[in-house]
Length: 252
Ligand SMILES: C[S@@+](CC[C@H](N)C(=O)[O-])C[C@H]1O[C@@H](n2cnc3c(N)ncnc32)[C@H](O)[C@@H]1O
Image (cartoon, rainbow, N blue to C red):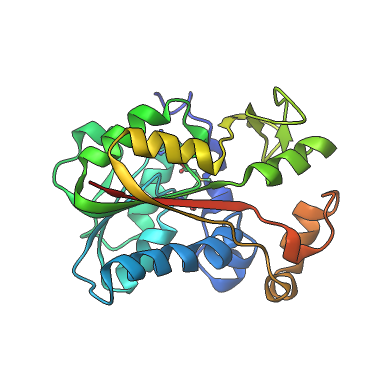
C-alpha cells in the first residue's frame, strides 16, 4: 500500500501525543485509560510479574503503547502498515526498539505476547492476520486484541455520526469510520463470538472477553472528550457506554 492510499497517514496527528495536556485531548485517551489497564492485567494474569517477555504491538500507531510496555520493563517491538505512523513511532520511542513497516510475514523472531489495540476492526481478512500473528507467537503465547464493541458502533450508526454508511442499522458489520471530514476508513465490526471462532479455528484456545465501560472518573478527567464524542450519543449514562471489546486467546 502506498503512502497516498493509506488513510491512516492522514490521521496520525490525532493520535500523536506527548505532554499530558496533549494526551488528554488525543484520540487515544479512551484506549489509554479504559483499555490499556485491562490489557496489562491480562498479560499479568497469564505470565505473573515477570518482565522477561517479548511483546509485539501490532498496529502500533504512534507508539504510545510501545512506550508504556517499555517503561514497565518488557522487551517490545511494533509493526504498522502506515508509513506516517511508523515514522512517528520511531521518533516517539527509544531508538533500540524495532518498529516494522513491513508485512507481518517479514518479521523475524518469536514473541510471548502480541497486542493489537484498535486495529483488527480495520482489517477485512482477519483469518489471514490471525494466522500470521499466530506464526509470530511462541507456544502458549498470548494474542490480545482490542476492537470496537458492536453495540457502541450500532448506537453511533443510529445517529449517523462518526460511523457512516454502514450496511445495516440493526447489525452494522461493514461501513466507514469518519474521524475527520476527508478520511473514510473501511471498518468491519465483529462480535466476540465471531472473534472467538476465528481465533479458535486458527490455533488459539482459552478465549477471554472483556467489555469495560467508561467511568465517572474518566468523565470528570476528560470532559472535552465526552462532549466531543458523546453529545449526540443515544446513551447518556457514561457508566453504561462500552466502547471496547477486548478478546484474548492462548496459542496451542
Ligand atoms: C486506531 S489506530 C490505533 C493505533 C494504536 N494501536 C493505538 O492504540 O493508539 C489504528 C492503527 O492500525 C493500523 N493498521 C490498520 N490496518 C493495519 C494492518 N493491516 N496491519 C497493521 N496495522 C494496521 C493503522 O495504521 C493505525 O496506526
